[in-house]
Amino acid sequence: MTESSTPDGMETPPDYRAIAADPKAAARATAAVLASRVVVAALGWIGSVVVARSLSPDGWGQFSFVFALLGLMSVVTDLGVGRVVLARLMDNDPEEIGRTASSFLALRTALGLVGYALAVGYVALLRYPSEVVLATAVGGLVVVFATPSHALSVLYQSRHRLLGVAIAESLGQVVQLGLTVLAAVYAPTLLWFVLPAVANEIFKLVTKGFGIRSRTLGLRPSRHIEFRRWGPYLREAIPLAIGFALTVAMLKIDVLMLSLLDSFDAVGLYSIGYKFSDMMDTFALAAVAPVSTLLIASWPHDLATFRTRSRSAAALFALFGAMAVAAFWPSAEPLIRLLYGDRFEEGSNAARLLVLGAALMSLVLLGIFMLASAGMQRHYPMVAVFGLALNVGLNLILIPRLSYNGAAISTVATIGTTVVLLWVVIARSMPIEGLLPVRSILALSVITALVTGAGYAAVQSFPALWFPISVVAAGLVAGLLILLVALGAVESPLPRGEKEKS
Image 1 (cartoon, helix red, strand yellow):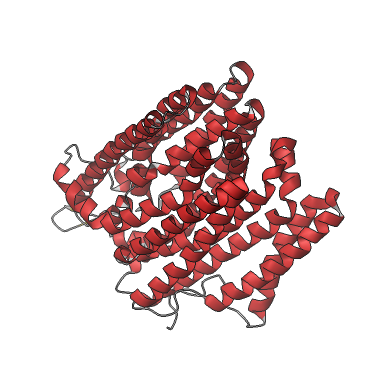
Image 2 (cartoon, helix red, strand yellow):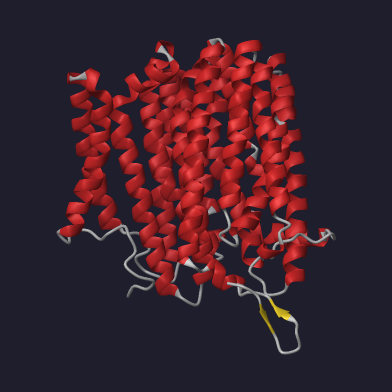
């Protein structure tokens, strides 16, 4: 869609809400981001293998702890403001868009600095080992640079122009991997292994920053930063910010509690499972971003389309999680042994549970973004409060008894409970029925359990064939679902049209 000219020669800006509502543009953006996530995940995985094999068990545990702590800082650095600003970037006034963009970038930069100070202050006040404090002080710069970088991604997302973002993130990961390998060869220490992640974030920030000034995007930030906008942004985002913060805390608190109630060695073994589950979360977040843009564009004037897109997204997210569980569960031991070495194999059961938790978490993420798209984010925080309290309580009971396996059990139980509570809240608060294809998801759950059990038994009987068995298991889940769709037992996860009768 291009700009048109009025009779007096003035250019009329494009209809950015119509651009945001374009499902084909959203599909292209999703494809670009998912392809990038595959590259980033693969290269990041290789990097984690290099680091895990280069450091001692305690060193790997310290490395994992530092980045888990930095991940927890998104409680402060995000605050849900991106979802609030997204709707304002669809304004028809270019000046308003520019001032929104500049104020948003400035706010996220300030939040990044606050997050950095909190991370360093935490390890210093609790008197963690000096090498952990130093690694946090250096590695914490990731938060400083990543926070405005993520804000730039939100700007691109508002136009479904994510190809450049995908390329920047892929190349940044290449830089990080190259520097990680150099560190492993010449200086395999904790401090030198955190520096490549900082370089990655600097590269992405600079690259995205150059691209955002293109006039074709209609997102060029104003030179004026209006700090007065921060208050309305934050006030509007408060319910979502609280809910999002509690969700991040709910997911990351287990690593911090494990470091205090057990050892860094236990943290290292547990964190191997997070390498797999975090990859799934990354894909889910990549897919949900364009979906949320579509939902925002269709709310509240086109509720039928909102419902169709919600059901389709939920079914696809569930299928993705089911295939991942069916592929990983049978072959966790040989896969971890192949990638990370024999000493990490004992963490395989925790890894299985974390992957199951990630499959459930994708539906939590979709539900949060759905509420935010409809401006109903105030309904979520109580669910997150309950989830956080449940996870802390379970961890206090289970970690002293079962170590990292107890932490994994706590995580799955918490996420499972949160999924149910969140979608009950959605069903009661949204003025649309049937946003979640319950029957299809239940059928998929049964299929996944049966296929996963059969796959596990097959790997135990034929351990040398673990890889083809896992591939077949994932394909079988998808194939059986397609069969049920053909028989009319469940609905297709693919949307059949822009509108669907409710």
